[in-house]
Image (cartoon, rainbow, N blue to C red; front, side, top):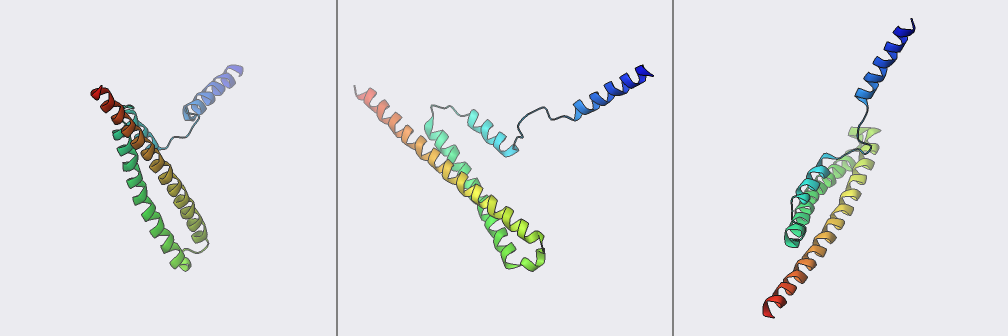
Length: 130
Protein backbone atom coordinates (compact mmCIF):
# COMPACT_ATOMS: atom_id res chain seq x y z
CA UNK A 1 0.00 0.00 0.00
CA UNK A 2 2.78 2.40 0.89
CA UNK A 3 4.59 1.72 -2.38
CA UNK A 4 1.44 2.51 -4.36
CA UNK A 5 1.03 5.85 -2.60
CA UNK A 6 4.72 6.55 -3.16
CA UNK A 7 4.46 5.86 -6.90
CA UNK A 8 1.27 7.88 -7.23
CA UNK A 9 3.03 10.78 -5.51
CA UNK A 10 6.03 10.47 -7.84
CA UNK A 11 3.76 10.39 -10.92
CA UNK A 12 1.77 13.41 -9.70
CA UNK A 13 4.99 15.32 -9.07
CA UNK A 14 6.23 14.36 -12.55
CA UNK A 15 3.05 15.56 -14.20
CA UNK A 16 3.05 18.81 -12.24
CA UNK A 17 6.69 19.53 -13.02
CA UNK A 18 6.02 18.83 -16.70
CA UNK A 19 3.36 21.53 -16.74
CA UNK A 20 5.35 24.07 -14.73
CA UNK A 21 6.59 27.28 -16.30
CA UNK A 22 10.37 27.15 -16.58
CA UNK A 23 10.98 30.86 -17.04
CA UNK A 24 10.21 33.13 -14.10
CA UNK A 25 9.35 36.00 -16.44
CA UNK A 26 6.65 35.92 -19.06
CA UNK A 27 8.11 36.75 -22.43
CA UNK A 28 6.57 38.78 -25.21
CA UNK A 29 7.24 37.33 -28.64
CA UNK A 30 7.50 40.69 -30.39
CA UNK A 31 9.97 41.97 -27.79
CA UNK A 32 12.06 38.83 -28.26
CA UNK A 33 12.20 39.46 -32.01
CA UNK A 34 13.21 43.09 -31.47
CA UNK A 35 15.92 42.07 -29.01
CA UNK A 36 17.28 39.53 -31.49
CA UNK A 37 17.27 42.15 -34.25
CA UNK A 38 18.99 44.68 -31.99
CA UNK A 39 21.45 42.04 -30.80
CA UNK A 40 22.54 41.34 -34.37
CA UNK A 41 23.47 45.01 -34.91
CA UNK A 42 26.98 46.19 -34.10
CA UNK A 43 26.59 48.45 -31.03
CA UNK A 44 29.24 50.83 -32.39
CA UNK A 45 27.28 51.40 -35.60
CA UNK A 46 25.04 54.14 -34.22
CA UNK A 47 23.37 54.97 -37.54
CA UNK A 48 22.10 51.41 -37.86
CA UNK A 49 20.92 51.34 -34.25
CA UNK A 50 19.11 54.65 -34.77
CA UNK A 51 17.49 53.28 -37.94
CA UNK A 52 16.37 50.22 -35.97
CA UNK A 53 14.67 52.42 -33.38
CA UNK A 54 13.05 54.49 -36.14
CA UNK A 55 11.72 51.31 -37.75
CA UNK A 56 10.27 50.23 -34.39
CA UNK A 57 8.60 53.65 -34.11
CA UNK A 58 7.02 53.20 -37.56
CA UNK A 59 5.65 49.79 -36.54
CA UNK A 60 4.28 51.19 -33.29
CA UNK A 61 2.66 54.14 -35.06
CA UNK A 62 0.84 51.70 -37.34
CA UNK A 63 -0.36 49.76 -34.28
CA UNK A 64 -1.36 53.02 -32.63
CA UNK A 65 -3.53 53.98 -35.61
CA UNK A 66 -5.28 50.60 -35.44
CA UNK A 67 -5.94 51.05 -31.72
CA UNK A 68 -7.27 54.58 -32.25
CA UNK A 69 -9.64 53.31 -34.94
CA UNK A 70 -10.85 50.60 -32.56
CA UNK A 71 -11.41 53.19 -29.86
CA UNK A 72 -13.48 55.34 -32.21
CA UNK A 73 -15.49 52.26 -33.14
CA UNK A 74 -16.09 51.40 -29.48
CA UNK A 75 -17.05 54.98 -28.61
CA UNK A 76 -19.28 55.41 -31.65
CA UNK A 77 -21.22 52.18 -31.20
CA UNK A 78 -21.32 51.52 -27.47
CA UNK A 79 -24.71 49.86 -27.80
CA UNK A 80 -23.17 47.06 -29.94
CA UNK A 81 -20.86 45.88 -27.18
CA UNK A 82 -22.95 46.14 -24.04
CA UNK A 83 -21.09 45.89 -20.75
CA UNK A 84 -18.01 44.47 -22.41
CA UNK A 85 -17.75 47.69 -24.39
CA UNK A 86 -16.49 49.56 -21.35
CA UNK A 87 -13.81 46.92 -20.77
CA UNK A 88 -12.81 46.97 -24.42
CA UNK A 89 -12.67 50.76 -24.40
CA UNK A 90 -10.53 50.83 -21.23
CA UNK A 91 -8.20 48.16 -22.60
CA UNK A 92 -7.82 50.02 -25.88
CA UNK A 93 -7.07 53.26 -24.04
CA UNK A 94 -4.39 51.46 -22.02
CA UNK A 95 -2.88 50.10 -25.23
CA UNK A 96 -2.87 53.60 -26.73
CA UNK A 97 -1.11 55.03 -23.67
CA UNK A 98 1.46 52.21 -23.76
CA UNK A 99 2.14 52.68 -27.47
CA UNK A 100 2.46 56.46 -27.13
CA UNK A 101 4.93 56.02 -24.27
CA UNK A 102 6.93 53.42 -26.21
CA UNK A 103 7.02 55.65 -29.29
CA UNK A 104 8.44 58.52 -27.23
CA UNK A 105 11.07 56.25 -25.67
CA UNK A 106 12.15 54.81 -29.02
CA UNK A 107 12.28 58.26 -30.61
CA UNK A 108 14.51 59.43 -27.76
CA UNK A 109 16.77 56.41 -28.25
CA UNK A 110 16.97 57.11 -31.98
CA UNK A 111 17.85 60.77 -31.32
CA UNK A 112 20.57 59.74 -28.86
CA UNK A 113 22.09 57.34 -31.38
CA UNK A 114 21.91 59.97 -34.14
CA UNK A 115 23.87 62.34 -31.90
CA UNK A 116 26.37 59.60 -31.09
CA UNK A 117 26.79 58.87 -34.80
CA UNK A 118 27.44 62.55 -35.51
CA UNK A 119 29.99 62.73 -32.70
CA UNK A 120 31.67 59.59 -33.98
CA UNK A 121 31.79 61.01 -37.50
CA UNK A 122 33.33 64.25 -36.19
CA UNK A 123 35.96 62.27 -34.29
CA UNK A 124 36.74 60.18 -37.35
CA UNK A 125 37.10 63.31 -39.50
CA UNK A 126 39.33 64.98 -36.93
CA UNK A 127 41.56 61.90 -36.85
CA UNK A 128 41.81 61.93 -40.64
CA UNK A 129 42.76 65.61 -40.79
CA UNK A 130 45.53 65.23 -38.20
